[in-house]
Length: 357
Image 1 (spheres, rainbow, N blue to C red):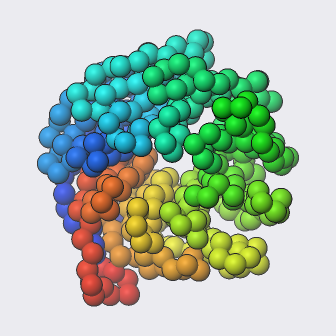
Image 2 (cartoon, rainbow, N blue to C red):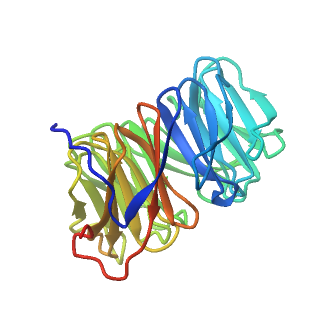
């Protein structure tokens, strides 16, 4: 696909600060209530930056032998966890970067990791198994072997964990060790997202489609026609709309009424290459999208999934992840060359229809 020329921040995005880590920046997030910004790179480095200036607070090198694969920030922002190719899970203090717990799962890649909404449990995958630990590092629950490698995990509430693998999504109660529900679909699931109330399950499939389930009614549907695998999925915080990747276009489905069945999705078109990251703001209907061409755009969405751009910027390389600061007044992006860019986001009362005037 054609590339995009570098451009200065536009609309409601304004230049903030930039920094660099040593390798592919694969994950990021805000810690300590937005006071610091955390980045993990593929070589196993983790870095903490002062949120407003970009000054390095602390950094650690090669914390996982073979490389870091995933990171999850505790809901209170005061600690975070990392997982890597060495089969270990590490729990860290956010402020000082001190290692507090080491959980060794054995041989294999610890590939997906996620704290529960209340921060009491930490879930991690190792090949076909899922482990859940308490906040102090004690093993709480372990799954039986899945039919294939677990490709995604998500918490529907504080005790219920969803796991995705080939052909199925399973909901486990990690306290009672009960299987609450199993949703089956013939195909390889590459991504999963749950609505905020836990009722709607959305999966991107290897066959370039998106599959929806409504748990309360057992209704399911499939949306086809994506040029690529929809590996990027994001619900807004009310569960009204779902943004999906799978091409250079952000496709937005509305779940108002009986939607998305029988509705026409919104299509957001400014990127020139496939979408690589999506993130909704904490408030309002603001969606940030990043792409392989290095472009980042912010969109104001309506409840029907339609929307207009209100800001844009260039992150330099393939955008591996974007993250809103908790107060929604800044947006960060990290890229495949280790670049970090943080922009100030300033709402304007009067904006042009395209948001860039």
